[in-house]
Image (cartoon, rainbow, N blue to C red; front, side, top):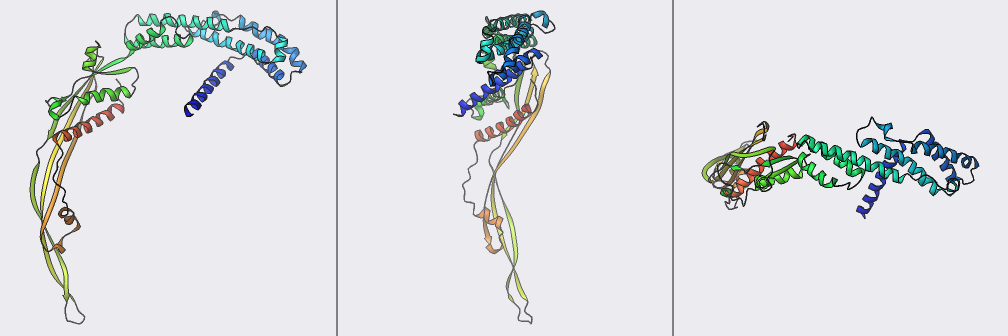
Length: 378
């Protein structure tokens, strides 16, 4: 139901927009005709409107019939014919309203139907857009490929499926698209399989994420995709972990000395005074630590000139630790933090090297992705 309502609202908005565009082209004669038609809609017996309408319509219709391309020579190819089509749509509105108003239809039984002229104008517009697109396409480079694509889009909009315009749109769009090839990642001089990855997922992830970001006229490929489809790179992305370190589990022991004065009684003096005793305890801590770090270099550059578009480094550090303890001495000397360690009965289960590598790789990559999204223009 929501989808249906959305489509209906979208259609209404488009119609309203189209109507407003046509209304901008009303002349004083056109406005007179539409005002008289409105009067006859409200009152079919309006003698004054009935008397004025035929001549007013004749004058307005003649002006539209005499429209030709010479009047719009200042406009560019195609645009002049689209303007003529829009001008003729004013006459089409008159035709429709006369047909829909019985009183007006009696007065003007054969109003001029400009629909064929409108289609002819749109076809001529499509032809001029199409030819201009072919001209741009002949340069066979990306800037003119974009211009060709825009012309073919206009041609297709003016006269849908004009000749082979859909095929040429695709060809021009392909020519206008910046091809960015993401090279395999260097995982600190090791293959991706060394770190337990099933494939070079970072390379594929980057291609997927950047394509999903819908960069204007830009498409991203892995090196394999580019080779398989004979795609020549315009930009190249190199990813290199100059540091990717997962250490060994290190265990050490240390002690924490605690002491506290506690009241054990009072003196017999008057007034009585408290008597204190110092108690002590030793917390014996066993600590296990596993340290890891990574540093990702990214270079994005233009294939032809070698000019850097981005050259930056992204770091991540992570230390996994596990601490447990026992104590000797008087437990009353212990603090809350000591009890947290003493009561820690969880087993020592450090993450695997593969899990740590994945964490480091992802954190560095997410920093890089945010950097790209914040302002890198391919």
